[in-house]
Image 1: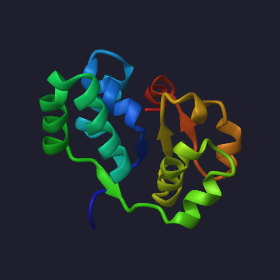
Image 2 (image 1 turned 60 degrees about the vertical axis):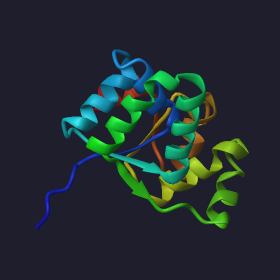
Image 3 (image 1 turned 90 degrees about the vertical axis):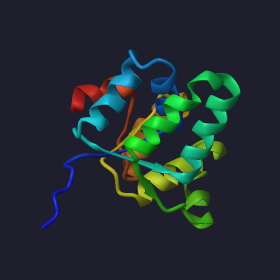
Length: 143
């Protein structure tokens, strides 16, 4: 039987971006916890694309750090959600965030870790959808 991480957490792009740009901050501690095996990081293709795009435009000097992170410690990449799944999520969250929420729900993760106020302001509503949303600091407390 294969060993499985006990905790699976979907990381929003802002967590990965913040960790790459400022490794000493709380998002950096989240990534370190993933690297040392305290949980399984899960992302979607959309999250990866957004992180790469944002790092290239805002902090191009850190693109090598992002590449190193993703190559040496690849997260689980879940399938893209269907348009129907995204549409259902858009009923409860900002439309731009619906694909992230839909991917996290479909991946059946334990947590959605985000610094995005759209997610953090709807914690109870999203819990009813089957996902526990936490900030990076709250996630570190859970670990």
